[in-house]
Amino acid sequence: MNIKDITIDTAPYNWAKILEDWYWILPKEFDVWLLTKFGDIFCHLPDDSVHWLDTGTGKLTKIAETKEAFFQMADDPKNVDHWFLPELISSLKSRGVVLSPTECYSFTLPPGLGGKYEADNIKPCDVAVHFAISGQVFFQIKDAPDGTKIRFTTIK
Image 1 (tube, helix red, strand yellow):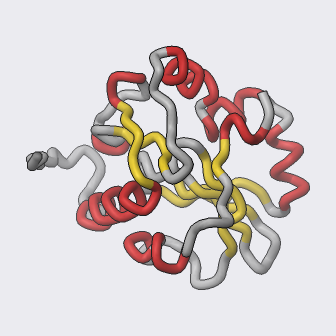
Image 2 (tube, helix red, strand yellow):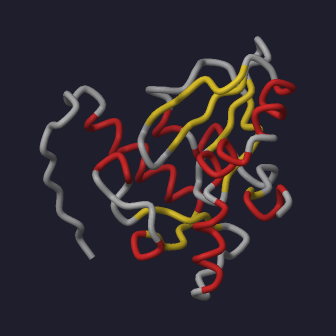
Image 3 (tube, helix red, strand yellow):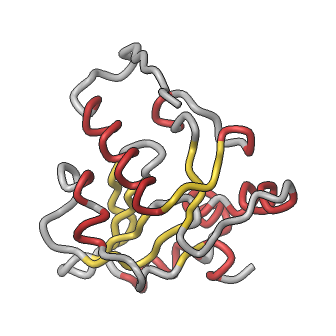
C-alpha cells in the first residue's frame, strides 16, 4: 500500500471555504497537509506540530510535535490502521464502492454518534458536503456531556 491508496490530493480544494463548519475546533493558523479517504485531515501548524481532525468523531488531536515525528509514528502499522483505515478501504473497494475524484468515504452514522467502522455504514460523499455535514453535526453536540442520548432524523 502506498500513500495514494489511503489519501486524496488536497490541492484542488478551497480549504478556507470547505472547513467553515469546523472553525469552532480548528486552530487559527494551519495548513491542510493530508486528506484521508475517510475525509479526515492532518493539519500542519506554524509550530511544526501535526494535528488530526477526525470527522467521524468530531475530535481534533495533536498527533506529533513535527512532521518528522509523524513519519516515525506512521512506521507503526497500528497508527496507520487507526488514522487511515486501510482494511476498511480494501473492504469497500472489494464491494465495488469506489470514489470519484471529488469524493471521500463518509459514515452514514458517524462513530462519534454510535456508528460502526464497517462497510455497511459508509457511502461515498462529495468532499465539501462531507465536511459541511459532519462539522455542523459535531458543532451542535460539542457541549453535550459524554453519554448524552441524541436523536436525529434523516430527511431524504
